[in-house]
Length: 108
Image (cartoon, rainbow, N blue to C red; front, side, top):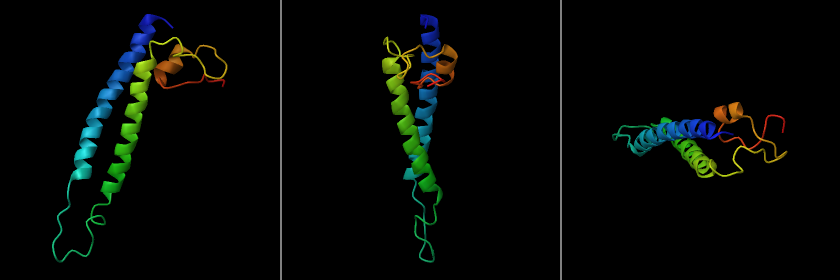
């Protein structure tokens, strides 16, 4: 893989990281919001805010993806990045460009 190809992948990963950070900030705000209820409310706070569970799951996934992408940035300059963990052949640039977290070639 050329240095230009590595930089292209790095840019893509950095762009995705920024999008994730923005999403994490928004999702954190959404999960921390309190739902107001009054004495006549038949539902608990959790039941009156079913989207909170969905936002919490999305937040967990976003944090997990962020951790993975940060790992890619840590490894991108290492000799092992872009090498299939099974067959030890280079992973095609187009695959890494599409899926920078790929650790296997398409065949494996």
